[in-house]
Image (cartoon, rainbow over all chains, first blue to last red; front, side, top):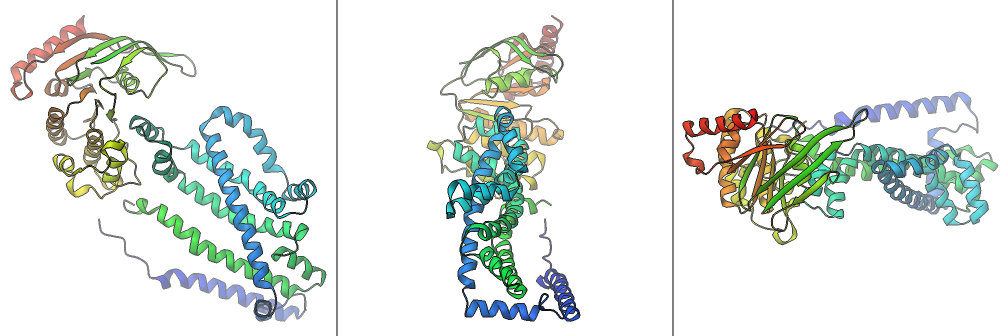
Length: 258
Length: 233
């Protein structure tokens, strides 16, 4: 079958750029209209980012936050995926673990963070662990659905041809879990970074959350927005340069017979 | 020697249990081709799954020939849609056969140009061929086929039947094929096991001693009457 013609990059990018321009223009208009120190315009915020990057410690704070996000995200995906898979495959384990899951799902992030700091001290491990714990139940729920939807027919093929554990996971299970893992990863990344800011605000002495706390005390909205936007840009880059290519690669086989 | 002796196999349904197989006993000499003939829904696929070791929940005994290496073709091709035809076949290979040359096998099944395609791009006939290639590639001691030609058009089914006969003749596998099609059973098998309607039990067996090439219409009609007599009791 002939390959579907690729749409030009401009056709994909233009609407995105257009809507971004509208957003920035609206922001600028609101800033003019308000004329207040409490709502700085985009140019002022951009200048703030520039200054903090060149003269300040923004790079250090951004990388501290990014490291925490990466660690918490990796932990949450690893534990959440294994637990979700086990619960989706075994009814008995699911019955035992489900009440815990419901408890964790409904425990406010703030409570988990405060308790982690109280019990384990104001440490890096407590901070990252608390963030991961907030994300794990979410990953479990998504991956459990995926594990329940695994094709029993392919499972029988793997058993009949005596696939080892690794071969079965890699070639039979993971490709089927792919869309679920992608969904968990995407929602996970944004959730994790928002919670990382809270743990930084409450108990770390660096990172974007700590800086936002400091500028909040100074009522410096310009720098609060500067830090928030700088990190949003980093997350956007991670999403477009890491998550999306991985997802496309995993879904390649699907496009051929669409 | 292949020995299957299922005294009882029940599916525990939600409301009432369903008795699928009862006193089904059959033996097949190593290297022979047996066909299990029965109406659809009679429990013959259940018996095949038990023989394959995929369903441990039954009363009875099973003895598989040789080391019990299994090649199996299910009713649906059951290929991994995210792997190419060749990858699907290679993944099934046991360690000592890894890296073997698959070209002759693909050629004899008409898959030579399709080895790099994904299952979603194949017709049902080609996907069945890929599933057959996977089963033969492992050089099985026991080859199990569950209605391997069902829902193919007659011409495709006929060609594939011929290819299967050739492959079986060259293989040392003990083969058991489950089918509802008398003509298919009489064209391919050395022995036909005739099953009752559900719960499946063995009504009797018909030995086909004539070589596959020499089975003319008169001979086939004769064997069909023999199967009819077994069914009438």
